[in-house]
Amino acid sequence: MADPIQTKSGEPTLARRLGVFDATMIVMGGIIGGGIFRNPSEVARRVHSPDLALWAWAIGGGIALIGAFVYAELAALRPRVGGQYAYLRDAYRPMVAFLYGWTLLLVVQTGGMAAAAIIFGEYFQRLTGWGISTQVLAASTLALLAIINCIGVKAGSNVQSALMLTKLAAIVMLIVVGLTSPLAPAQATTSPEPSAGVVGLATAMVPVLFAYGGWQTASFVSGEMRDSRRDLPRGLLIGVVGVIVLYLTVSWVCQRVLGLGGLEQTQTPASDVMRGALGERGARLIALGIAVSTVGFLSQSMLTAPRVYYAMARDGVFFSAVGKLNPRSRVPVVAIALQGVWAAAIALTGAYDQILNYVEAIDVLFFGLTGASLLIFRAREQQEGVVVADRIRVPGHPYTTIAFVAACWAVSLTTIIHRPQSAGIGLIILLIGAVVFRFWRPRPEPELTVLSQ
Image (cartoon, rainbow, N blue to C red; front, side, top):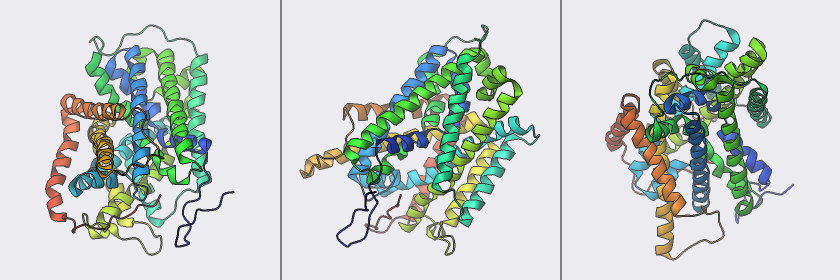
């Protein structure tokens, strides 16, 4: 086993022990959550076309693949800085980074967790038959996980690996059952309108990109790769392409078994596919797998994002209490509690499709800004005459990077135009953040908090 690399001061750094297989599993594990078990229905309702539904998943996968390479190169350019917050701060002004952290807390992370918790609630109801509402189940789950993480209890690596295997097993089981089930009879869609065309495809990217969410964490493992220049791009390519194949297959299987009309009408497509083939026992089996994997995702999310709020507070641009650690558990309790309470509030007040629009309109906006930051960093390199050749680079840059930025902003704009009521809430919160920032002006050249991975 490789020894940790030593710094000049003699302090050990991250051990470079990960290879292509490890990177591939990390990439796939960061992407696959509960969205793929729910969102084929959301996509079908927005495009009203089986072909466009599959194209939506393929295009979303392409965006995720380019985005993963963009974030991997950003991690190579800023190896001592962790996360989107720092990339945006270095590329633009502190206010842009603050707005990212502000919306991460009030929109993106908490909204995404609320949506995932609703998925858990829907499948938990199918599993138990309890009469409790989905939203109450979702909020209660988020509150419980927030309390657990504040205490400092977190799943070990073996538990997380088991949850990853559970997710993969549930997907494979769904695919196998769907391939061996009889074809659905011809059905009409729930909408009398014809295929929604380009506009429908654009709005369908919201649930698609939500399901693909997590590719941005792929770059976090670069410091632990034996040969990051060779193995990380391979892991990114294999992992994201593997997820694309799985997602396309799941979408096609759901259409095959339920028909487009049936897919539009259901809220739990995975359970319906399994119920049609194996009866109620099959529906309960897939519901159990989805519920377990979703809780694993929520538990992991509950502790990771508060590190951004913690960094903001340490940089003097957020409440000072958020930047303090509990002396016993050594976790940012206030940050975790704040995130958990807000996520539960969103789950109680919003429906799943509303939350998707609320989240993705802002999320992809900052994805585009982060992609554009790579263009800025590359330009600075050329101006300064210091170009590091031996590092991960985005294939086809700058064209692919520009395409990624344009696609993200197009999805954000389309969502705001066609779903103004829910997406507009996120936009209003963003604008409020610009005003709030005036109360937290950073100190001149504050020292950036490094977020250890």
